Length: 66
Image (cartoon, rainbow, N blue to C red):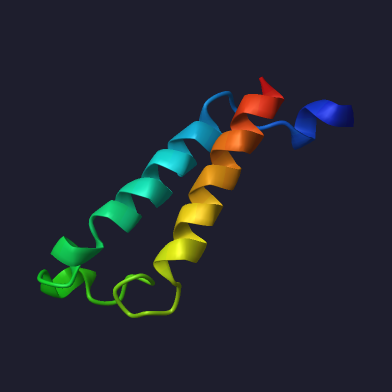
């Protein structure tokens, strides 16, 4: 099938960047909501710096792919 099977939809990386950045911004609120207690940032499975680095790298990847 060639290269077309490996391509992502436009905007997918940008949407993922937004979600990762929003989770980083909302971690203080997530600590207060019971159903969000298992999220990686709240459970300290991921550091805020690592989450932000991941979000920025997704945005850079999205920019390069355009």
